[in-house]
Length: 301
Image (cartoon, rainbow, N blue to C red; front, top):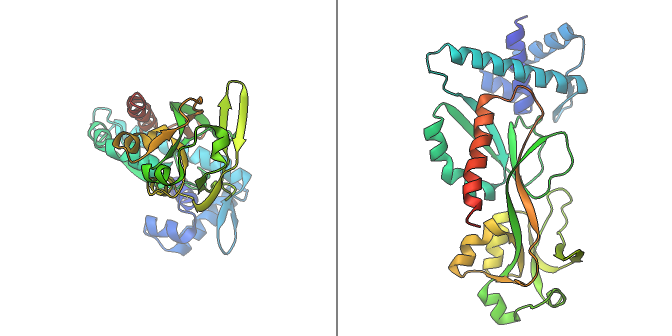
């Protein structure tokens, strides 16, 4: 058994989510992938994957072995790159998870600069508002807004943003302008469904040491950030959005910020990645670049 080929096949199965898709990317028969994994498990004496008719998932041993395989394959890639005469140029393919709104707002407009600096790094953007498993999704790092849930992931702060309550001029003309938290109860909001629970989130405000949660009535609920902002601009209700998402429509007058006398709550914008002593140079370069680019953007919020 070619152990290097077996490790490469195993990581591809994990990252594509199945034997058939792994076979397609490796350009071999699915039966070849199946036999390779079976031989690898027999050689190691452990089960690496749970298999069902619909999906695969890593066993505890498989998770540890996957992390080791990724480290070995990255080291091999780095060793080969050092001998290609590229003068130490960073190369490789990375998969980045983030939301569509963050990609459109920050990452995609700045990617030409990244490509100019690192022409040998290929980026695959996985866009979703839902919480994803980095290992099962084959994702190297993820960029998220808000305070992340406790996990074993390493976190680096990119910036801090505020939460603004906003409405369109048309909505305010029809329904009036709320001047206090108590006034919010007489207004309609656009609902935003939490990706973990599927339920619309309440609005939380801080007044000194006091924290107040205000449940809002919503006739329209969405689960996408861009759709949420668009619904607010369309006058479908009040919205409570991150400052970086509403900076432009506020500047253009399509939205009006409300309750400016209250302290606007803050949250972080962060990049998270799995614990590993073997973080690839390509992933490290992308993370450092995000800190630089988003830090510049944050200065204008």
